Amino acid sequence: MHGALLVATGVDSPADFERCRALGFSYFKGDFFAKPRVVTHRGVGTGGISSLRALGELSAADASFEDLERIISSDVGLSLKLLRYVNSAFFALPRNIGSVREALTLLGTRTVRRWATVMAMSAIPNAPHELVSLALHRARMCEMLAGSALPEERETLFTIGLFSVADGLMGAPMAEVLESLPFSDEIQAALLRREGPKGELLSAVIAYERGQFPSQPESSDPAVPLPGVYRAALEWADEAGRAVGA
Image (cartoon, rainbow, N blue to C red; front, top):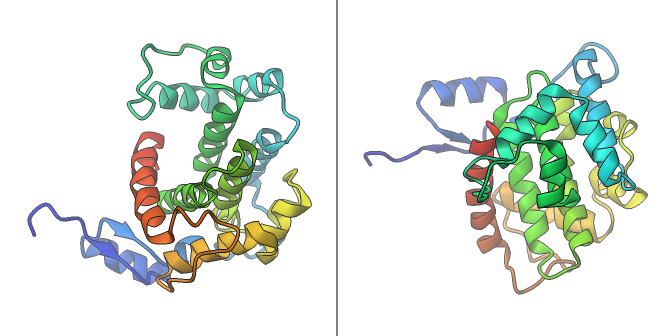
């Protein structure tokens, strides 16, 4: 069909990815994007240390308005990317925002923290944009499945979905990546072992993403079924990813 975008599924290796890209596919799905890149040394590569540090500071549960302003403003690249993003069509704000403080005041700490974290992840050296897109899709699915839960719960689930690809982004085992991040035991259990209600929800999201079509997770809102959430999250992640540059 003229103008159609092709989606390649089952992309499980670098060779699969390169072959599908050469054939003209526009979107890719498969385990290749969520696996850590093989490295010959232990630990996160030096190129990702600064990114991990920024992610750790942004993810701290007790980070205040002033903390976030300091963390983001001290990184010129991060602050410029964030301001460019919040002034994009994705937010459609009535006026341009000219500073990190103004963004925090107008959008709130929760929104700015979320998108600054996405910016920091997308700035990780050699991070495949497909992997950042996958992180956005999982994060949005997890958040949407929470339904009418409290904002704090929805934000926690968004974070779990977003960081579910952290090992692939950093090229290191998830346990090593989490050593540098100030996450609660609940979040760590969900990311490392898929334990607890949030871990089970993440498992369902990943299973559906792989075409296994699991049953609705018990911890999710039954009013937001998986098929509809998957499609809506895919559209949202595509739009958000274009604005981010992923």
